[in-house]
Image 1 (tube, helix red, strand yellow):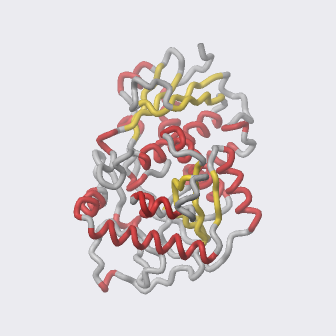
Image 2 (image 1 turned 45 degrees about the vertical axis):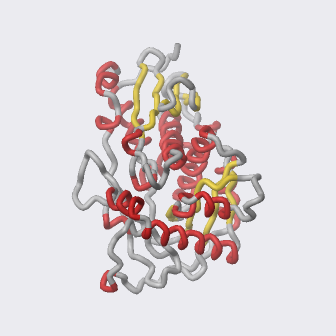
Length: 340
């Protein structure tokens, strides 16, 4: 049995850190349970927050939960415990995607995901990381930083590949084609519009219009518009970077466990980027169409890796934070009471 003693304020902080993670359409498709006896946190899929048309397989949901799982691991380590993680621990409960057991005694500093010495830096970054759909500067990322991002993905079982200019243009073309398909598909367009929040709504919480950012008037970078009306008066002539820095995060296999690992790799990459003052936005559109997803990593006949996310990186303004559900909204109340 774990020697961890978890009080309610710390538990709430752990959950707040987890839900600070990014999720597709900001659906936040997770819920948490605490087993106070073993001091184990369960992360379960919130199926009612899935995307029936854009994500029928649940791949993006798993990636989103993987991001939250990584944040939880970082927070657990920040408070001095060792996070012992299991993916899909009970096959008879398919909604149970991961567990994190707290072991050791709080106060044992220096622990972290994979004994990462930068756990405190990652912890600070998780609170300030926001997707930025704004224009970035025409400034290339240093080679040393790209190496760090590649290593961050590798630590979690992912493959991070930075695209040269020709490859970046190809990825943007695929993203643009997917964006056009999404706009033309009535079901997907309606599903996207559902997750635009005009007023705060604790029951749903999606992407506030202010966080969507200006549409690139040249469609140079096809940013998701969530079905918004593309009226000329709202298409500000904002020049996006002429040479976008685009990377692909992939995994060697394409099973549910790989999707969860991809989410952890993605969040580690995003936190390391944030620590370096680098902004990021996620271009997920092409991954929502199987034929386009096969082309993201290059040769469709090359099955060495499977694309899980397309990432745009750069230096620029911080994005508008999207709202998050509270710990009380995602954590079972009876478990919260039991932890007191």
